[in-house]
Length: 482
Ligand code: PLP
Image (tube, rainbow, N blue to C red):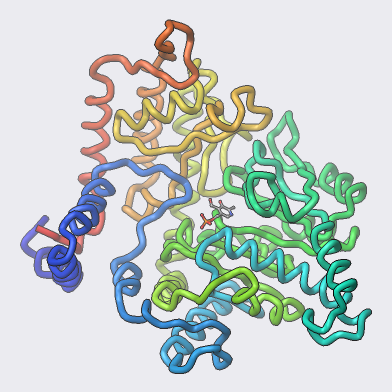
């Protein structure tokens, strides 16, 4: 790092913070410093990760963290929440303005929490409120034991329709290992086997037959766009509430790359998101909704959340303020341009891509053409300093653990400043590693789905080329810890 970066306010702030931490537990100070070193040195292609700004990071390390503030702005169960009220209302204001939403709830601690808040808001609106009305009760405590038991049965007897996991859906959309799968009867829509795209006629047919309470759209591994206008039409036709989980692509909505039919906010009654993926904020979640659900959403705490994290809500406010700057629109467009360039680079080298390309921030490689499982490919790429994650592909013969896919995304490298020409080089590096890898064997000499063998010397050569690429775009250039 340069003498100039050693003197920046950011360098002084982080260095001082680490010194204070080192005085208490040096191993933690070392781990924090070690993390920036690791992030600087790796070619990060995890589609759900990013690099939050120093302002966002610094906003999380302070005394706002000490305050309990259950409730909502101006209606807290604890005294002394003046500053938390400011923090929460500024964050919500930025969220409403940025996304054009009627209501924003910024308390969820993560994406899964945001989804739980949304599910229970819809259940409260559509199942609990009518039950209270029928019983002439103002709130659940007023119900007889019999009516309460009937309501609990009804709450646990609702249906949800969402995208299947192997088409790119998310575990929190009603799958059994997650609490959502234990709450709802779930059915999935897949993608067209020929094109890999969402087939809206098939979604409509499934909705007509299954009649879900909630139609959920959103994904973590679908490389194309979803038409939310059509999804709302389908939901309305069957009396479902349309919920969109935009955890992955919120940054593209914020940056106005996804507009019209592809912007979920005007179409869905309720939208959830994480704040730390393409939106580039702190780890956390958020719910946006129309007026009809606002009161129910605001009951997220104590319904499914504990006390809010005021320091993280503050960091959400800072990140949302950043996302309202014109530079963020430019960033979002570059994320998509980079993903397209990466996809083109891979295709040109013969890699098979699910849906044959991308319209958003992620690309899903089918690595079976290289004779590898996703697990082998992921490990070989990591050997060369390229960080990705394995992912199931539609009708994956290797299942969700070994998989046949590798998911890559461009939000992080775009934050770092890499451009389309460099994405071609990244594609070349990926192809070099995968073409130089063969499946390994188990201890007993049988073919393994986990072990891999990367040709001697390749990891070093690729890591060197990746390091050259990264050196042109220093990460956190304004932060010098030396
Ligand atoms: N929803 C989607 C679509 C996601 O991709 C994820 C994270 O992977 C989540 C929800 C959960 O987010 P978190 O890890 O913050 O709970």
